[in-house]
Image 1: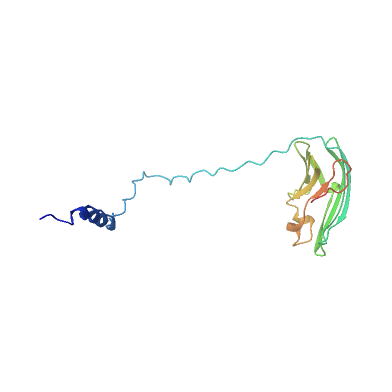
Image 2 (image 1 turned 180 degrees about the vertical axis):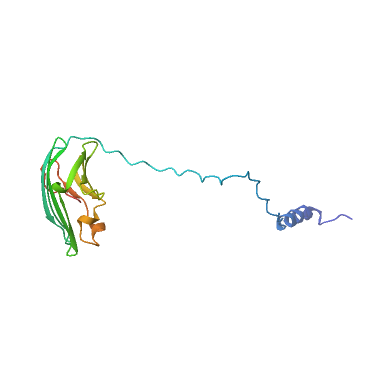
Length: 170
């Protein structure tokens, strides 16, 4: 008598094997050499694009009031990267203002950007650089030149390099 289940048994065997799972114990921790822990892998960061050195010659005057109440009144004259005059006041709405005047700074760098440092050694720095669309006058670490609590909202002023007026920011 012939077994009629014979053709099914290989399939039942395969089904039984696939239903079984094998759990292996966790691998033992790798042996480590004594000493300081290994450094984490290095994070690759993009380097900022360097400022292209440009001769800056501008007689700038920017007076503007934004919809949010931010105002600026900035005057600056630069000849061959020498700052000849600078007066800049900005207001952050009605909350306060910042004021910068050339008499309070000395120029310490001409290229790749212009840099002025406060003569009181407070660390306040003004920087001027030019890209194809604008000349930027910015500040860093100048909280003492501002009303308390507004420094984080005190933005740079942007000049049109051709006309010296306020640059379009949109």
